[in-house]
Length: 169
Image (cartoon, rainbow, N blue to C red):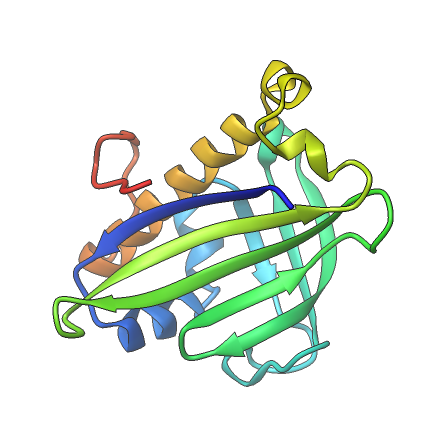
C-alpha cells in the first residue's frame, strides 16, 4: 500500500495544534495549498466519529473538486477520513499530532495511504515515477503543512511557500 507523507514541526503543543486544525474556518480565509474548504455538515468537527460525513474541496492539479468522505478516526493523536470507495482506488487521508520536546511542540504528519487496483500509481514504481502523482501530492501536502504551521504560530498563512522552511520529510 503506497503512502505519501509530509512532516513539519510546529511550535505548539499537540492539543493546541489539533484544536486549531479542527477549526476548519481558517481554510477559506487563508487559502492554504490543497484544500479550499472542509465542512462537517452533521456535527462540529471535534465531535465527529467514525463514519460521520466530511465534505472537502481540493485544488490538486489546479482543478477544484468537491469530495464527500467518511471519518476513519478522530482521536487526540490523529484525524483521518476515507475518500473513494474500495475497488479501483481508495485513499485514507490522515493528520497526526505527535508531541515532541516534552509536549511543547508537535510534529504535524500529513499523509495518505492508497490502495485498490490503481493504488500503485502513488507508489515508487517506474510508471508511478513517470506519471509523477506521488511527488506532486507530496509537494502540495508540504505546502499545506507550511501554511498551517504559519497560521498556528503566527495567525496567518504565508504568501510565498518554500520547501526549505522546516519540512522534515
